[in-house]
Length: 97
Image 1 (cartoon, rainbow, N blue to C red):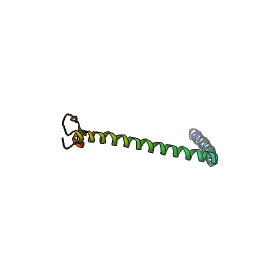
Image 2: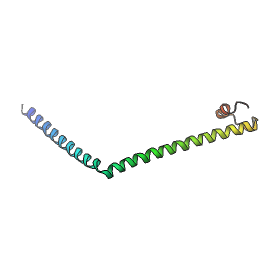
Image 3: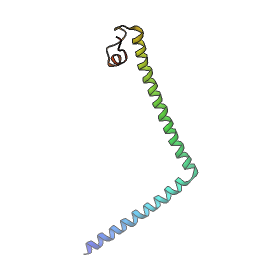
Image 4: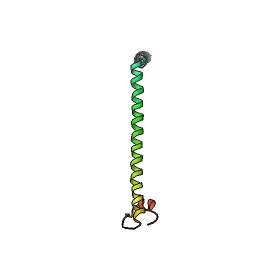
């Protein structure tokens, strides 16, 4: 019986501590996130991330287009097997050889 009471008391103390920590965290988060400078900084960081990702993705697509487009132009311009290596890119991009 005493062990059960001690266990219940310990659980109640832990609940009180965790509840107060959550309340403190909520107050800190609300205070920090409600200030205009924090909101602007967070929004700016998100915009920078999205912009950086879009630029990197666009650069990747352009480089792929230039690589494969250059291979196709070289194959079509030469029309010989020596100009095209026997790789899968050439078989796909250079059907005339």
